[in-house]
Image (cartoon, rainbow, N blue to C red; front, side, top):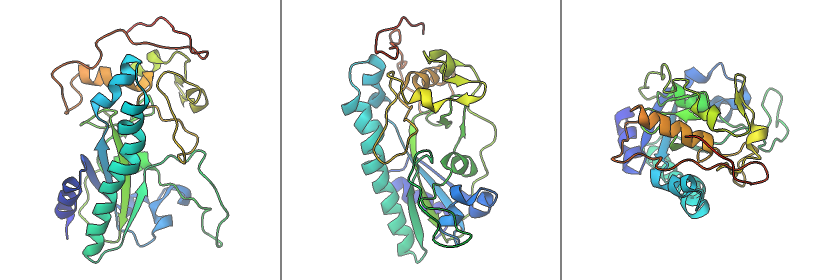
Length: 270
């Protein structure tokens, strides 16, 4: 079993993105965010992703359908069914080759349950691996100004999971640079000024009625990949030719909509 085998299996099972990082790249992370706290014998960290369909964002972009398009096919079903099946099948294939593999969802740490350490020197459960760090370490992409992971393939449009294994696999180079060109489209699209020079204020994002949402069991950080900020980012990246997954027609066809905190329509400028 080698890295080429593993990547081919991941794509066979539906992955659109797959990268491999050596466990040594995570050695400097705090144990609360490190895969080595979960699986100390880990030698390789696989990051697998499935794309958010551009069409799954259509109902949100038009302001006419949130749940049966994005809410299911772009968020909950995509993570809990499609990506989970890819991750599970890949884990099974690795373990069939005699190596242990630990599948993990790519969740954010904020608001996740915390228990008590089971022994001295161990972090409190639950350890949540730093997904943004893992994606960069595995050569897939990097976080931009808006706080979204951006990849050269899909821009904002992906969801990721992890597989930790004790198989020592040839790793990709860590991702260098950024897909983000600091254009400010994300910040300009936010009616509430949640994206600033010091980062993203997720307390504000949690109240946003412009496409941000939340999911059970996923902590307190809202999902923003269909929110006004992320859609504006996607429009810019596609317009600049920064997404390899290109389309015949542009994503934004009409002026974007926006609501204030009382869900009253606001005038917008694209």
